[in-house]
Image (cartoon, rainbow, N blue to C red):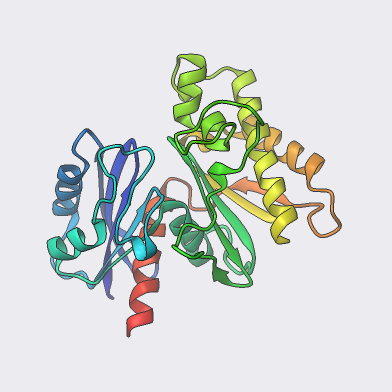
Length: 281
């Protein structure tokens, strides 16, 4: 069976894995992103490769230019206009495909996760940052430059905290791990019940907006903050969705933990690779 190199690039850690066409993870590793992310990429890829892989798929924080040719993740200041796709192609010698990490999650959830068989849904990552990917009528929504689905920059608190994007009150500026640390002075893992409830409520508010806008009824949420907060977070998020998604077509929308759990980022990255390869064969 053919295998792919899967790379998940995040602000806190970078993970690599070798994944087969059925979604099986054969080898994996992860390291802290650090101040020199490219050195970390070199290390994790070297740790998992056997040399027999046929494609490289990448999920990375955005924004990015079309096709992931250049990436400028808001939570990786060292990379601005970084030519990630070409650098990886040179490193691995493989056809390389790059997409937003949350869009990658959406692909993975539809492939072997909680959205299998669903035609329209939202997948989200609530972690160091907040991102999203949208599938409508069976197709991943890309947008003009590949950045569609950036739910982290839906305004949930008008006149709220300043966001690195330049706006105020974005979901990412209010509910990400980075924001929680800035607001409370403690990491999200040490957040109290009030912070957990508020974070869930704000995520639910953003999800309700998307459900109302795009006529979808399922949101799957992954990421260390959401999954770490667990049931109280999802209860608060669902309560806000129920309160705010009130149109006939959005009423009853569900917000659930992503089906792939901690495996979602690397399986999503692999899905990006398999999707790209299928379009070139």
